[in-house]
Length: 120
Image (cartoon, rainbow, N blue to C red; front, side):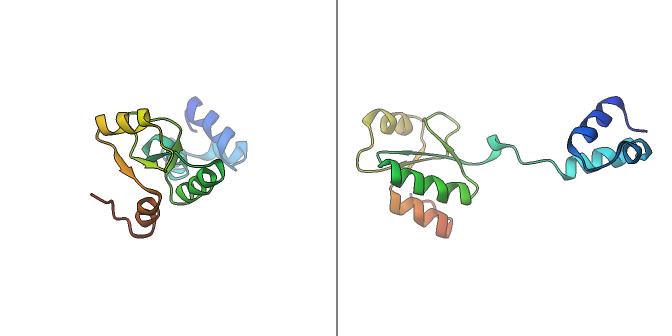
């Protein structure tokens, strides 16, 4: 029989009946939990879009999400890329430069998604 904590997790997240859960060992239960864990968002590379119209930003965000990138709204030390449009604000650009974050144009970002190449 699984531990109390594992039993609560399996009841909340698994398709197993209470009888099936009760028949499991701890090892079997934890194996199921870990094999069905969703990836953590904070491990995904992140991108921030600035200087784009809302429709362009929405389209770029959809591309980024489809490529398993996390879209964020601000520049911070965990940001992977800043994609800057023609109307990008100087504060975000300066902060990204200070922190050594790669700054990409829209074309460079699309190329990154297509090829995996980060421009230098």
